Length: 507
Image 1: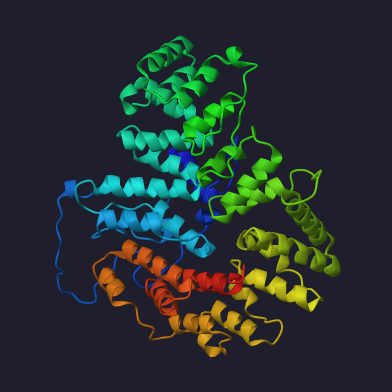
Image 2: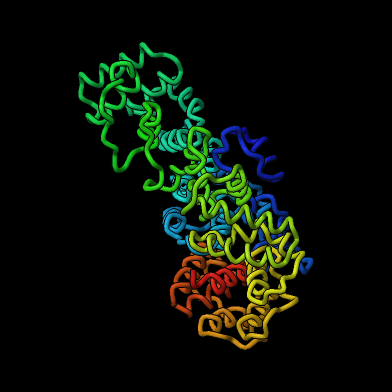
C-alpha cells in the first residue's frame, strides 16, 4: 500500500500499477477540478453590501477533521458536504444508492465517497459515516481505496475499523501491515483464526501452533475453520488428503487460507471485492482478465489496466473471454493500420463483445481519442463510432457533427450540448430528459429544502436515487433528478448520465 503522500501523487498523476496491481485508483481522480456553478462553490461567497454579516460561532471541538483521499479542491465538492445531515440517513443512502447500470453515476458516487469532507456533528456520527464509506467501497470492489481510507482515519483506533482494514489488506495482498498491528495489539480482534494466521505470517510458527491447539481444546472455532487452519500450519500431514469442501460464503481470511493450502477458491461467485485477489500474479491470465472486467464494469478499476491485460499476450483458445481478447487485439491492429474498412469491421465485432459484458463506456474511454481522428465510410460503422464518442469525455466535440439525419441522433447531439429541447424528441424517455434541461425545470421541494439547509451531499445522494428510479421508468423522477444535478452545478454529470441512459438503454 501507499503512504498518504504517495497515494496523493498517484491520485493526481495517473495510474501506475502497484507491484501486484491490486487496484488502480479510478482515473477520474486525475481530472482537473471543474468550475462548478450554483451550490457547489470553489471559493467563499463575496458580500454584495458593506453591511457587517452575521457570524456563526461553533466550538472547535464540535468540528471533526475532514477526511478523504481526494482534496475538495480537486473534486469541486465543499468540505462541509455532509453538514446538517443525519449520519444514519447518510449511511443508508451511501449503502443503497444504485449505480450499477450508469457509469456516470458510478463516477459521482466514488467522488462523493472519496472527497475530503467533514462528518456531520453528533455522537458517533463520524464513525457511522466513515464505516459506511468504507463498506460501500468494498461493496463496489474498490478494496485498495477502502484500505487507504481506513488507514487515513486510523485503522487501529477501533475494532470495527481494524476488521475492515484487515479484510481489505487480505484482498489486496498487503496483509503484513495489518498483521503487524494485530500482533502488537491483540485486542484489536477476538478472532482466533486471525491471530493464528498473522502469527504464522510474521514467522512465529510455535505461537501460531499453540494458539491453534488452544482453539481445538476450547472449541472456539467452527470445525471447518479448524480444518483449514490445520492444513495451513501443517501441510505435510495432509499431502494425500482429499480437498476440503468449498465454503459458500468465505471471509477474506478463509479465502486466503484456502489459497495458502493450494485449494484456491474461484472469486466469480463471491462479492465483488474478492476479484481484487485475482488481479495478483498468483492468478492465471484468464482469472485476471475476468476479475478486471468485473471491477472495471462498476468503475472500481481503470480501463487502462484492463486494456493492459487484454493485450498482454496472444490468446491460445477461443470462446467467452478469449473472444473478447481477440476482438480487442484485432481492433487495435486495425486502428494502427488506419484502413477504414478494417477499422469498421473490427469496431463492429469488438463493440458486440463489449456490450455483452457491459463495458461500453470503459471501451469508449480507452479508444475515443483515436476514434475521433478518423472517419469511416461504412455508414453503420460511422454512426457507431459517433455514439461511442458520445459516451466519452469528447461528447461535446462529437456533437458538432451528426451522422445520419435521424431524430434520435439530432436529439443526442442537442443533449450533448446541453439543449435537448431544441431537437425533436424520439421517445417518452427522451421527453423526460429534455424536460430536466428546460430553463424552468423545478427541483423537488424536499431537495430544495436540503439545499437551503446546506445538506448538499444528502441532496445529491437523494437525487441519484431519483435518477435510478427514473431510469427504471418513473419519468417524473428522471426529470427531477436531471434538474437537480444542474441546479447544484453538476451539468457535465447530468449530460453524461442522460447520454449513458439513452445510448445504453438496450444493453
